[in-house]
Image (cartoon, rainbow, N blue to C red; front, side, top):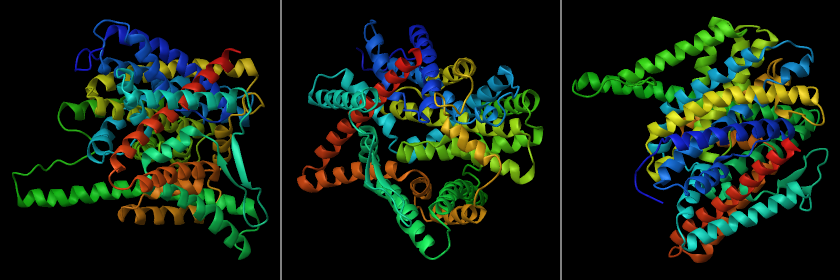
Length: 541
């Protein structure tokens, strides 16, 4: 296989990518509705693309990279849709929503997600070089697939072990999915750890700083705020404390987004003032690119504005606010995916919906439409950012990947909607034992507004302050918001990495870092691949 720059966006790659896209998008819709979770498909589609394309003469790593970029595009479109829209039928089982209206929502989200990821790429992938655990895992898998060295053996051995572990945890449930350390009491909630090789691998890849900040958020929310608040009489019980904690975590993430905008505005003012003193310096600083790219960007935004206001119940002014909100949340999605490997797309949908509700009282379908288009855009941003990270490492042209992702996002938008309605008709609706759609249920609860307004605004203010001080407030907020079982396994992975580095000392630190990357990539890939395969089997079964 040619490891040099060669053919990247090819006809055979498009055909293989589209076939894989249809399968992955459909199975992702099922697993998102059934399990309330969605494994990243990045490593799975990388392995599939390698297995098929390496049989063709003249194939290259870049061609494989572009092909798996297209193949994975529809998975997170399905996730964004499944985590929000089913709530319409949970509130009213007889609600009449046309498939065309839902297609407009997914298509708009896919277009905006692609556009705003292009804008985010330079900052988060090129300049800040965020780790993007799944993107790194895909890159390591690509390199290992063309190598016969010890690194390849280590990666694929760990991938096989992780796959077997996942089979015996999820397929043949012999291994427990969660370890419970403390069952919970009147003051302290239950403390547990998700038994996941993939999550431990993510904790090791993103490094001890981000992992321990994440774990610190969980300690703050579950082990400090909750028991102290209940003992002091601030909360009536653990349920009331949970409501405060969740809204505080959401506020921290929102505050980070506000901080991003304030920092960008400040930098623009400073650079503009500097440019006036030095006329030869470039004056233009904006989120909208210059030249022809600017007009293309404005054309996409205008097209989406027309689609949403004419094809859904979202009004013209609501659509404007929604698009602004999607820009903000996609930047957050790109950053969080890069820092932690986690992309809470339904939370981003709720955030933009809350911004709309501050000004208007939208209809039920309009409210879910706002959340849906935002979640789809943020989901695609996370997936695309992982792919662009692996492409950046392997030397793929970003333009080839962007075209592939755009095509995949558009086709995936249609396939996801078809899968949603087929599953709805097959299982008789959502919210049942077979299709519980827990994320959509959470969005349904939030359609009525914030559960704890003071906690949300306190978190937002703190989030802005922490971001200005260069403290990863969004990662901290994620730890406060998410179940403690996820945070503990991430911290465990980071602590194992720290222990290994401490044992070998400074001389072996580089070797440990390299092996940690390979081992973690194998753990991520094995569980990710097996999760997707189990979802496909379950769907057809």
